[in-house]
Amino acid sequence: MFGLVILAWVSCLRVGVWCQTQLPIKVKAHGRAAMSLVRYGAEQLCHALRWNLPELPELVRLLSTPFHASGAA
Image 1 (cartoon, rainbow, N blue to C red):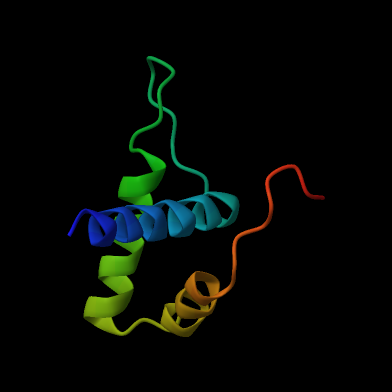
Image 2: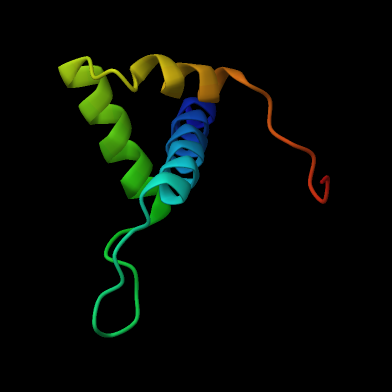
């Protein structure tokens, strides 16, 4: 069960990082981001799955590609 939670968290984080490059998260007046990358990714995934948005195939393709090795160019 814990493994499934970790997979969901990593998936949301990966989508959040990708979305951050497309449309950055706003920074509030106190200097912190309005939401975390995990929350940003979770919201994007939920909206794409619920409303069948055109970005859904691209998000599925993103989640099906392997992670890059740490420190690789």
